[in-house]
Length: 141
Length: 211
Image (cartoon, rainbow over all chains, first blue to last red; front, side, top):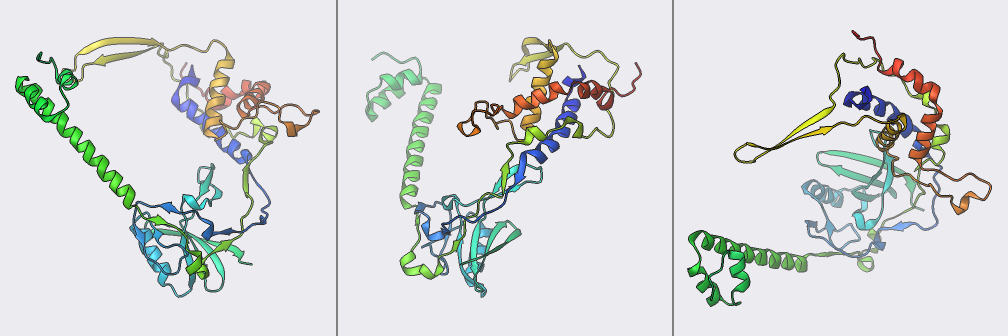
């Protein structure tokens, strides 16, 4: 009878949840696949939201989702240490898996990718006023 | 022409031209005439919205790479294999004894639980009770029902409710046991841990009560 109560269910499920999530996600050794991903391989796609005219991108237009991304794209186009940048969309088919704060396996879709003047790549996500920069260890070959 | 009973009937029977609409409109009552006008207005708005959407679709810019003129701005980065993946051996390592006990066991209230859930269907406007219902809350007939329910809840909360593999895979090889779904295995694991389950109530929610 007690098992039917919400607080009992929450307690039991919550206790198992963490153990299962710790067990169900495992880290694997990362290897580099043969073929590198090029931004220019993105197929043409229509965009019904705002676009920015930028110079340092391989695209004819830089699609943006909101005003923060618009400002960020303009910033990247002017930044002295940025050699090239591109806005990543779902058409880019690029995502990184990560463990969320609740322990679930999720996918992180970076908003922008930039190549710095020293040939280092970085992937950026511009979330409103907060900006999480994920530095990349990879250097272009 | 027979006067229509309703706007919808009139619209179906009317000839498809503006004169026909007007003839029908004069024969309609005032209320139905307003409905007819509203229907026509809505239809025209829908057509206008559709036209606007189509125009916007045609005007949507195409974003495409221009490697010929901007090749120096192309970016290439290595594709990495997945760093995180769902474990296929999670169940083999699942030990219920590793599940932490709650800090404070839940107390069992000294009341008789409800056997029925009462429900009243009320009229939206006058708030009068239209139909009262009484649903019986069925008790589980045996522990397996409770375990199944909890297994599904736990698997869903753990994000593994759709992790399946009940059938043997060709890569498993003939000598290996067939893989089972996570929920099935979790249920089996819980069932096999009878000793643990028996101690569970005293540790989890059979706290000292007034009974």
